[in-house]
Length: 366
Image (cartoon, rainbow, N blue to C red; front, side, top):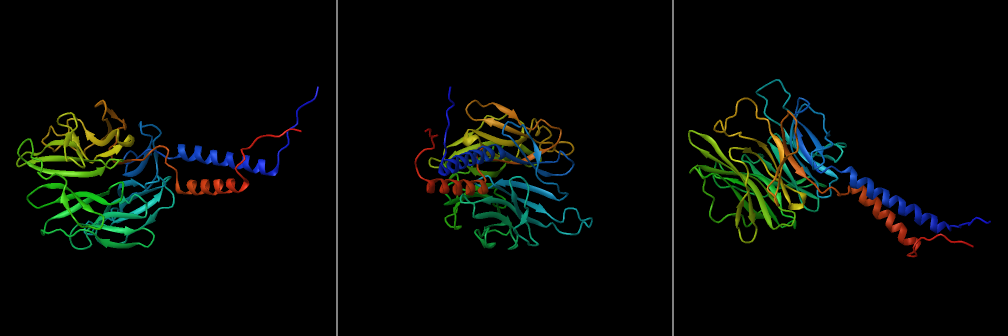
């Protein structure tokens, strides 16, 4: 009885190694990237954490005593932008805040400071190609929206509000990179959602007829964001009534083309903060407090937010952070996002594969 011997050429062995390396990189990078980044004070001070999109496998990315917030995934899931106040631990109460924009790798490593200005720089948002950030800044004397080219740190102002007390905030890029949605606060007229072209021109309200409050109060719109397919805009709003405070919070979705407005069926009297898309547009994330408005918008003590997921198809609401701490400022990224480094490695491996030849690997026998 004879055993069967297989002979492998050097090209076969190289191709096999490249295939296995590529498969390993795909596998590792797919499972290494978390789905939701958020801010929590569960360890005593606000820090940035990540978790899977069902609330499991929570781990901390930062370890700082500074006030930190607004984490946002880069488009490829390899980096996170955020803002941080470097004066928040100073014992001198007269010292002004020093919020600046930072980025770090998805695992919390390689933290870099992008802005250094005595005025506030907050609320970063990535361009779809990952080369630019928009953010709010008070560097002109009023809070306006600015754009930065990350590679050069060049910064340019995009908005110029009219009134002395007007301001804009929380810019968010459209998926095709041509438009930016943002908040526009007009003194005495509430805060509404606007859209502008990416160069700052053609600013206009999202809704031609501004939404009226249920209680006849002033409406403040918050945290607009585009759906992954660019067809809808999500945001939350709050109604304030003189003498009563915050009385009603809503989550709204607007059709980009028809401007048709849909209010989600969230429980009454919940306090709801900034909202974000999840599950490729199939769900909405929001920090909430059940019955948090029962005290006319002034709950006793420090508010404790949980992060909830609203499933658009069923209307089911799931608590993702069943923890006694407060959890806010979340952002979602696809679970199979690849890091830049992994993408580059894969490109190199497949380029080498092509040089070996297109013949599939098969063992040969005598």
